[in-house]
Image (cartoon, rainbow, N blue to C red; front, side, top):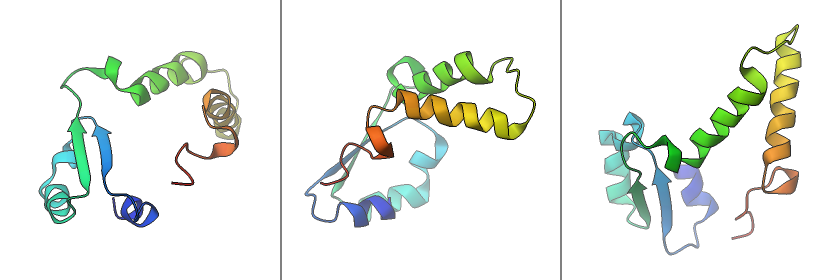
Length: 101
């Protein structure tokens, strides 16, 4: 959160869409969010991985790369994972879509 605040310091609001992982609702996180009202948090419904795009990404990664992989070394597996992530990235060059905001 601190990194986002620094990166997008000129933004009037920053909206985060998060799952219900415990750290997203921790006392420390809630205190920080209260002290930084430019951040708006939208919690996804509980037990709804189909609406969480990163969960769909992890499933695709698991189905195509990590499930029953035939790699002889961890480095070979990591190379395949990296290639998968670069291939499915919607933003070429590893930059996220709001890099210049």
